[in-house]
Image: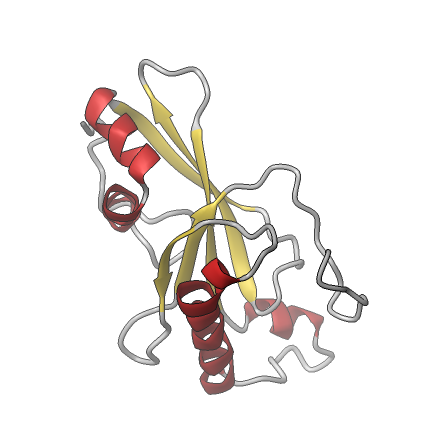
Length: 162
């Protein structure tokens, strides 16, 4: 049940709306679907938490507040883009074009939708993997919030146990 009336509102500065978020979670997240049927949504807020840490993406922490529950329901929205790369570039332009970033993002979507369930490691649950189709639709990964997760550098050595 949604009391929050402006479902057309954007999630922070992302291209995604509250309606897109709620539809995605209702369809793909069983826990959220149960909460949504039982309780009334009071508010939805998204904050950019990437702080330059997202590789070629912005990462948003999304909080969904229900009237009858004290703790918000938390998810992560990861949106690919060239902004973070442009900020770190000496020229102020991204060294990688949107076409290449879309390819990388779409491969990440494929990983989560086709391979992640077969890997014996801790990964966030992905509720929606939307491919980036240039000029048609923005890309996104909507996933569970893992509070104790840490970033690992791309050059770090890892083994199968990690």
